[in-house]
Image (cartoon, rainbow, N blue to C red):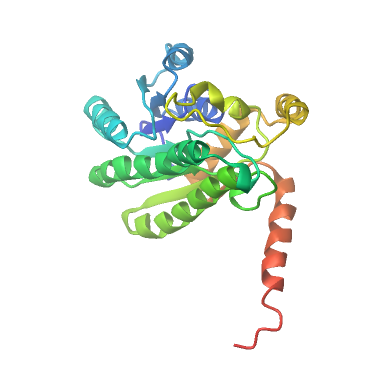
Length: 275
């Protein structure tokens, strides 16, 4: 999808972090953007950055885990813009703990946003892209933890592995319609993902022990802030991935070794099999 100018994009989780970086990159390339986020005030504040842009940027409050709400917002977006060409299913949350210490509420919350949010977005917007008849692109935000994982990461990693699988399958499904699909697999980015509890539903209060202890959590948050990649850089990487129809969009070259080591472990398990 080389020519993105005057296309229409939908970005979820658009009020901050990677989502806002995507909006900046897309608008800078002449794309009209529907900004979706669950945080109304943050969304309103973020929208003010684009008041003088030469493209149409509109905010829409949306809980991506709510299937009916996603479809209602999709209809509103279509009514306003007339079409949709690009969808970035980016909204995400984080929670975790040792597998036997995780709570039902954490599983429901994380899978509701990270997994079902992507499914809801694709089912609502892909038909609109098809209806436009001009092709398009879908970017689903997974994580490097959708390709390799570690201790206390079962909930989060499960959601992101699923997003990678969905993206790979959908890429095959949608190729005949000239619709590309990319899985965005970021490493450490300077975002507030570790502060996801600010948007946790009151109906899901039971928390797991967490991915980190209190001291470790503070250290990790400081690393995200000081060492994490600027979300605006990720936004440009996503724009490049859309233009080049990349199946995967990575943010750090150094992560290639992690993937190589995992694949070596998998391939090593075929040794000695005769069938």
